Image (tube, rainbow, N blue to C red; front, side, top):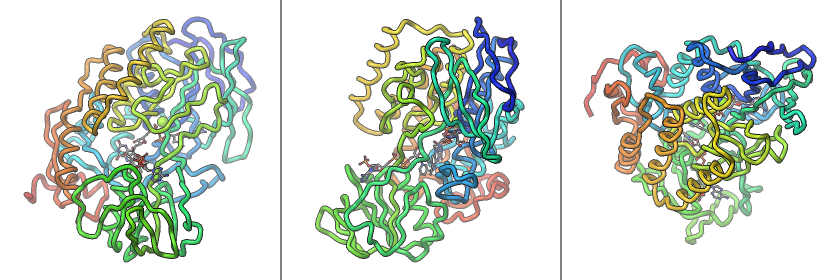
Length: 475
Ligand code: FAD
Ligand code: NAP
Ligand code: MG
């Protein structure tokens, strides 16, 4: 084992930490898929008898899973903290499960049999939990504990972290750490633009962060603002659940899908006048509710400015070596997981976590600063060459495979062909793309054909989904 000092309990006063070689004490913030991947990779090192880190994970929610820990709450949580959850009840995976499958823990490993390619929310969460339960990772997580402040101490080259026990409203004693990992996600704090007249709109106005249940909008005509994945999926969900007509308003460009009857796209709205929405092209539409699917802000209220990532959604946020290590301050001891725009998700977080673990535990040496800066600059240059979704997918594939190479992974993380098929399937028919099947890169096994087309599948329970008769209905 790597650390010679004991991990302090939350109620102990400050532990004096010796930072002699190999004595890493890591503060991990967030127990969503990214944070849990770090715990998993670290435990893997431990199980292999290799140098590993002492980790204390703080999670402000009462359970792990991050966004996958579904909540009915909106606004603030039971403790008055900003409610983290942005997922909705009827959410199904918007990418094939084969594109987020862990090579060392496949869906076949977890469910013991083939299942269709686009699982509902509960099924994916079950899969994640299965991998985390493989090792007893829960014991590392301090639940209901929010990180309030992180300071980098230049003289001692370590960090002081302030936390609060939310259940008792009790500030906990400061803790010292050698490294900090930020894994608090970036799809939680809504970006909420203002449009003239929206403040006097007579119906409901909400951000997709607060969207929980499409049935709420049954019979209502909707304006959806935005042209990305939330706009697309919430429009489809609402029509599926019986909403009235949906008008999607885009800023830069249309999504260009062949929408089912009742969904159409218009350029950006110019103003709201009562129930009437005016658009740039001079047209108008009458709506009953407005859903702003206008994305999220990167928000790290607990980090000082010198450690704080500031970026728009990007496949390669500036300032992070290998998309992960914070170069600005903190002496190469602050890491960010999962901060990219996400085609790849779970596997990308996992390989980032493995790389972070290797660096922290001394299995991977960092090059000198100049080389790291050049590497970042090269990736940023690559960003400028992106022209379409397939070039974006190709870049993220390269990013993930580069990290996998860095850690000497024996697994294949190249899901480029699968993602390209997915992009083609969506373009071919946005209503049926979730009915398609894909083959696992790890097992070569093909997903099952779902018993019911997604558009008419209302039962999204785990039991129904995993207990289906193979290929019962051909399409
Ligand atoms: P999160 O899941 O956001 O977890 C961050 C954790 O940090 C949370 O548990 C939070 O409580 C905790 N935290 C935050 N602040 C603090 C603090 N100060 N102190 C302590 N803890 C804190 N991805 C897919 O692969 N497939 C999908 O189908 C899919 N659907 C999505 C649907 C929606 C609506 C959204 C918004 C995202 C979706 N995603 C999907 C992407 C999603 O970002 C990832 O799947 C994943 O949840 C990211 O994991 P994470 O750990 O980086 O962040
Ligand atoms: P996003 O990808 O960041 O998109 C934000 C959208 O808002 C963009 O289209 C942007 O327009 C628009 N926008 C921002 N500011 C605007 C303004 N002032 N006026 C008009 N439009 C504005 O955010 P998202 O769509 O919420 O997706 C976030 C994540 O959630 C994604 O990773 C996605 O995979 C996930 N998700 C998954 C599912 C699922 O089915 N499983 C469902 C929903 C979301 P421009 O393009 O013009 O900049
Ligand atoms: Mg996390």
